[in-house]
Image 1 (cartoon, rainbow, N blue to C red):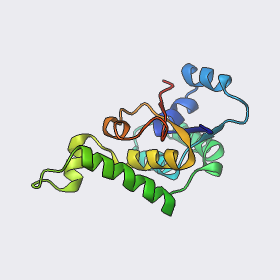
Image 2: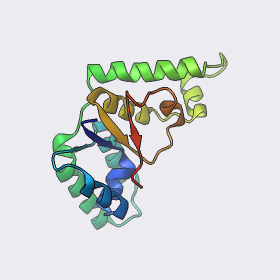
Image 3: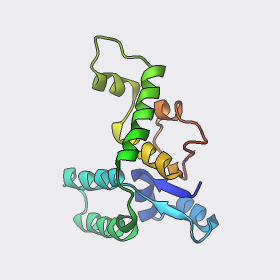
Length: 155
């Protein structure tokens, strides 16, 4: 793997200086890529837009951290990413066929599939990055080989 793609929970953990994250980062070569994708950045921004009860100053500090640390090198969704996304969804579909009475969306939700996680995994696969997440992603992990995407949890 060329580097790591951080999911939202690991971006937050890095901001909060979680010891397990900092310890892992110290072990990496200096030029190791630590990236986030536009889906993750969107999740963070949406979370801030939906949350009005937390400390605004702290949210502003987090936004500044994300903008400085991840925004300049964020990986975008491309036509190519869509092909990886389609492969993941197809594999989930083949492994867990949809009962005819359910909508596609309801079926995926019932399986515990978060569409944002599929997109994030697709970005990791497309760019040859390990996906660093605390999310379970059971259905996604069962259809992607370790050669395609390595999943790690640093928390």
